[in-house]
Image (cartoon, rainbow, N blue to C red; front, side, top):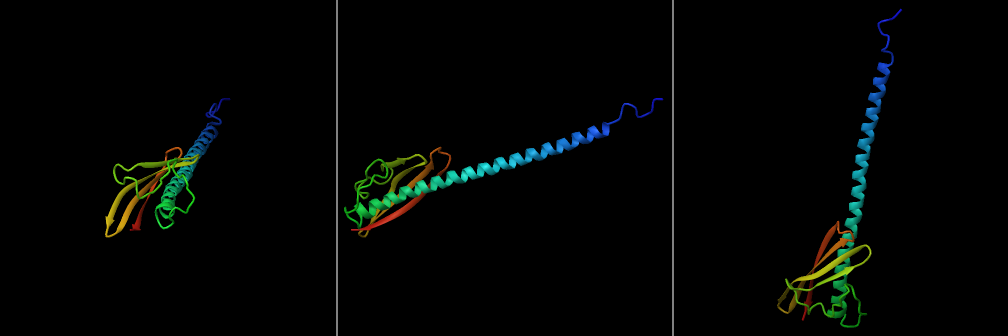
Length: 152
C-alpha cells in the first residue's frame, strides 16, 4: 500500500542541513572579513611607525649638524652624512621655497629634510626645518617640524 508521505522522506533533514551549512558559511565569511581588516590595521601601524621614525631620523640629523657643525659644538664633531649630501653648515643653505632638499633612503624607510623658513630678529636667527618620513613602500608618510634658534 502506498502512503501519503511516500517520496518525501528526508526533505526536512535536507532542508536542515542546507540551513546549517549556510549559517556556518556566513559565520566563516564574516570571520574572514574581520581578520582581513585586523591584518590591514597591523600592517598600517607598522608602516606608520616606520614613517615616524624616518622623520625623526631627519630631525636628529639636522640637530646633529646644528650642534656639531654650525652651533655650539663648532667643528669638533665627526662629519656625518645623514642624507647622501653633506650639509657643511646648516645656517648657510638657502632657506625657504628654493631651499635644497636632503634625502636619505635605506632598506626600510626614507626621509626628506628641508629648511622652510629663516628669520633674523635682534641677533637671533630662527630656522624652521621639516622632515618628512615614509616607509619604503610609500604607503605611509609622517612629518615632523623643528624650529632651531642660534644667537650671533
